[in-house]
Length: 243
Ligand code: SF4
Image 1 (cartoon, helix red, strand yellow):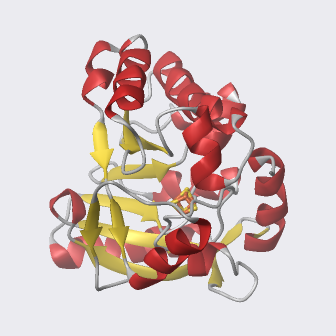
Image 2: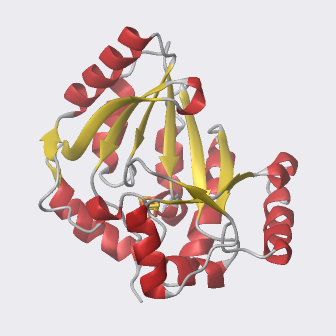
């Protein structure tokens, strides 16, 4: 079992260099009705169902370093070319390398909505992170919970179970700081009972969090191989043929 916050520091030392961070791809994607996407390298947890585990596991050998301005320029260029109103960082975990992320946010024009897709661990570990994010009015944060409770989180990530409370804590900190945010949950390994308990827990933070976004595992061949290896059987899957 590992501590995700400690692991984030180790990963940061690999994927960040000054204010530059490693990325492995810039692309347009169909999610959210069309969005320019910068896929970063490096994560602080190891979800068994991660479609990008081949990147997460090899932060030293994958990707190239980009400055915040270079990242913002690429995102804006893709968005303008495709007529998108939204940009995001995805791939691995964008909150690693806080100053890099904040400088990317600073460089994105106000007319574009920045969707920050995060596992929330580092925002849950430090309320000042949420306060820093509150400075950017064109930001929306999607916190993706890995399971419905601490036990599921531990089973799905092999991390210390306390990491799940950090994920929920991220939503608390973001709400306190007035940052637009919403939860999603990987529910393919949850029972209806644990999922309902999570809904009620989140509804205590904000009533509409009860209707959180439910994610299903996408069984790309590499994901299926990993799930087989660790003996995890999802109760619902989406078949995937592209990575
Ligand atoms: S948090 Fe996201 S990027 Fe990190 S291992 Fe889990 S699914 Fe992959």
